[in-house]
Length: 346
Image (cartoon, rainbow, N blue to C red; front, side, top):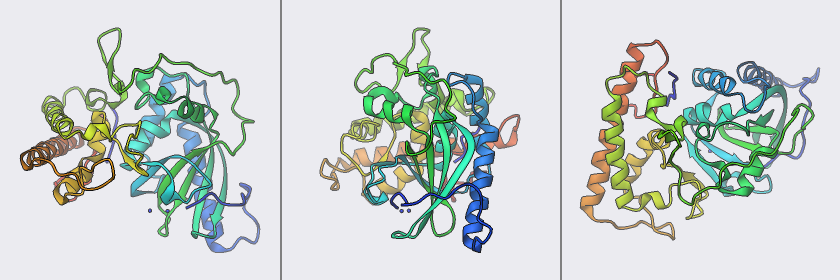
C-alpha cells in the first residue's frame, strides 16, 4: 500500500553543464548543489530500466510518495514545456504535488544527469534532469489514457528531460516535460500503440471486470484493512454525481474542452481527491462552475449546496482514512487533503 500524500517562466536561453564552475557565486553554487542532489535521488529511486518494468514503476512510486528531496510548493503545474510561451500562457495542469509525485513522475526513468539555467526575463531558476518515458506499461498504470491524443502520446514518447521551475523561495512550482535534451542514454525504445481511445472514456472496465485505471482507485492506494475505504468510495461517488449534474465533468477532464490555461482534473477518484480542497473553496466563493466563456455559471442554489455538501463529506472521509493509515503504518497513508483546519495528519 502506498502513500499519495497531499506561480511562473519561459525556457532559458542557455544551459550549463552538470559540473559546477570553480568560481561559481553562492546562489549559483547552491542551485547546482540542489540540482545534483535532486537528480541523483531521482536516479536512485527511479533508475533506468526497461520501459515495461511494472515492478520498477511501483518501487519508484512508493519511494517518491515518501520523498523529501523534491521541494514542491503547495501547488504545482505540470505539462509540456511550450518553451516559446511564458508559463502563465502555457496550457498546464494544476496538481496537488503528491499526485504528481506518485502518479506522474514515476512514469519516467532518470539517469542522474542534470543541467541548470536561469531565465533573466522572469528571474527564475530552472533545473533540468534527463528522463525517459515508460511507454510500455499496462494501460491501467497511466493516470489516464495519454494516447487519447496522438500528439500527447508522441510528446511523452519523445521526451528526454523534465524541467523543474523554482519560485523565489526555491520551491518547485512548475514541472514540464520536454525533448530538448539528449537521447544518448535512452537505450532500446519502440513506439507503442495502445488500444484505440473511446471518446470520453477516462475510466473503463477491463476484460477481467476490473475498474481501470487501477492507479487512480482508492483500492489501489489504501491498505485493505482501512475501515474508511467503503464510505470513502461512496462519498466520492455522491460527489461525482453532483458534479456531473452541474456538467463539471464536461470541462475538468484531460481533453480540456474549455481550453483552460490551467486545467484542473476531476475525472478519477485520485484526481478529485487531490483537488477537493480547491473545489470546495471555489464553489463556496462562486468562482466555479464557469461557462464556456470562463464566466461565473449560475446554477440552481440547491445543486450548488449539494456539491458543497458531498464535497465536504468526501473530504472529511479522506481525512479519516488518512488518519487511520497514519496510525497503522505498515505502509504510508494517503493525504490528499491540504485543508489545514480539517484535522488531517501528515
